[in-house]
Image (cartoon, rainbow, N blue to C red):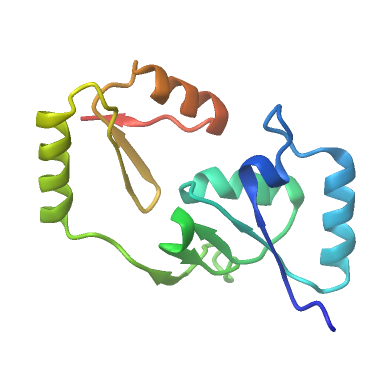
Length: 142
């Protein structure tokens, strides 16, 4: 069997309990990439939450974000990652879900993501702060 690609989740797989990639893991990934085998990062995270690790590993391959709802290709000649596939909800559906959650389950923190933007209703919410600490991404409050 010839290995054609490796797909790796980030949290709990690529990262250790300190949310870091160990030097040993980096070396192993570089061996794979140097053998022309793409190492593709897969996550529920938004693109900037994945790209950071791709840069840390010095790799340029597609990335799979939002658990497969957004797939970006490797960097093109302009240094941009083109969209290979994207599935999104209608804005009216998102607004209705937000309304239902806000009215019926007000203690629940609700995060919205659109391509590479993270929107929250309360930036000081403990879960938002925790996610911000882990991902180094700051949300927009609306």
